[in-house]
Image (cartoon, rainbow, N blue to C red; front, side):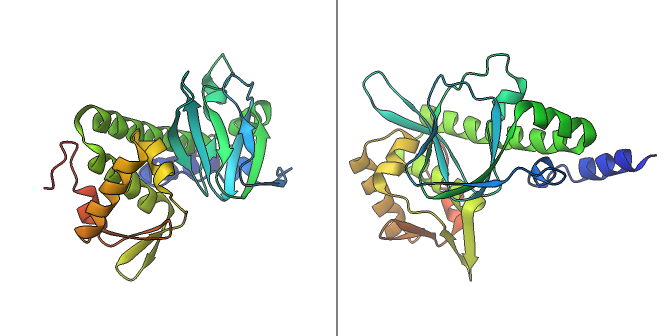
Amino acid sequence: MDSQKKKLQSRLQRIGDPADFTSLFSEPNAPPEQFVKKGAILFNTGDPLGRLYLIKEGFIKIYRLSEEGRETTSYLLGPGQLLGIRTLLSKDDRTLHAAEAVTALKVQTISRKDAFDRILNDPEILIELLQAYRDRLALTEKKFESFIYASTTPRVAIFLADCAEKFGKTVGKEIEIGLELTHQRIAEFVGAFRETVTLSLHRLENEGIIRVNRGRVTVLSLQRLTDYTVFGKKR
């Protein structure tokens, strides 16, 4: 078995590991790191994409605007995550969402053509892309179920648990989410009014599950947070 097949076999045996896109953006000819200001729009709905972005530092929100101008955040992406995966598989490279930097960003970007060239030389990258699709699908399914069955508090719990798992820093038994989460930002993600989200956060605080201090959320018990079912009850 040649070295490339051994490498691919090894990665398949670790199929549950998080996606790692280092090889896609590494030498030779590694794309330079770019800095993006907070609030900058990377692209709008309907723009041609044709590129992939690897987030090195900071956070991006992927969102849509309704005809009434109401914003719904579909995804929140942070360090190590890939933006623009759809450009690799879709014949229509027009974006379905807009992307905005919610913090200052450091990113690397690569064209569709260069990405395909690297995949040909390193098929293991396909496994990383499958992992990213898997994670995105799992979150989409979870959100879909929550919108059908759950009240606002479980939807907020799902969002915070996802942020804690992806972007959290463990301090003792607590997990600090490394992003300022205003009530309005959470409301945009879970599809609720800001006032309702405020009540839900207070409920989670009163039950000793989270702590909120000036937009910074600390998860006191990830297990209890994830135990909120789509039916709005705790197991």
